[in-house]
Image (cartoon, rainbow, N blue to C red; front, top):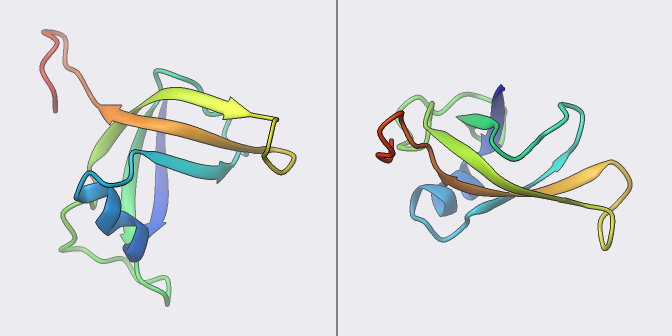
Length: 90
């Protein structure tokens, strides 16, 4: 399943640079391992940052954690590179 999600520019920078390989989210979409997330970077005013390197990039959810240590209905999921049919990274 593809999830198109907004991400604030300050967090998008860390994902784009490879320093942040996880997301903490309210689980209103039923995130599962193997799903794909497509990022839409926004600034503090909610305006899309069209020139950000993470904008419209896709990552695969590698693991989903819920429960222990998290607020009810929140999850943490790991982000990995999307693989095509031949096993190559996106």
